[in-house]
Length: 387
Image (tube, rainbow, N blue to C red; front, top):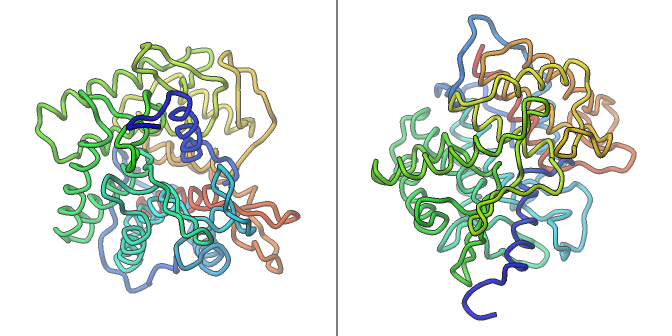
């Protein structure tokens, strides 16, 4: 294969990593004695009244994650075991995505003990020379050699937030260190790429829009000149990926060689992540928020659409409504947050006799996915910061 990846191989790897954005299938309970201050999600306009009390649901979800969905290396990708040899992460494999979501939830809840545990485990499991491996298979004892920019950025962002929340400069110093590494490997000529391969020392050729986390890119420990170039380039790519006011979602990826956007279909989780990242920088489109509010109210946000806005399936998922809840929280929109949590909770397992009790999944099939459960946990955590 030489020193570079073929275009087809790069696309294949990147499409696998998109599970970090579009997985629609989806630790210990916070200490009551925690005294560390919580931090408000970036860009949040805190309302005068609490958005919603989700403490009971959050505690039940944490118990499910801790007792059913967690192993020695972190949160399982799926509750059901597999041979862990598929192209996509399955079974009890663990993802840096999951670690980053847990770290964010811990810091937003002001739980330093949980944060320390998660950060230590994440560093031991995923850290490579060039980035954080996106995936680890315990059965295969295999650390995959590519990172996922969206997950590296979330880990870095959580470290920055923890440094502020817990008054611990070592977290900020670690964030600075890893942010410089990220810039050195995942950024070329002022443009960010989806992944960097630790073996072949190369990136792919495009960026997936939901990977562009502007609020964390702004914090990278680089010069103001380099930061300005990066933010201008990536912010422009995000905003120009807007589809239309009639279907106010976003393209999937931008190819640097052709200068063109492409989307086989529009995955809702991906577009909602893009809208969340824009909202955190106060760059959201009003039409996007109106559309989201209408669809949440009607319970008609589905998993995938054509570029013209025609749905291609009837899948509704926990993660979709978790993301609209986060968007509501960031915008200080209490009605959107509350309506989204209500929709999200429709997927909760509420039978106390069920192994999935308190979690989110398919009780009949015995399946529960990390992404759904951790996005729900993060959505609850956003509420906790505004009480």
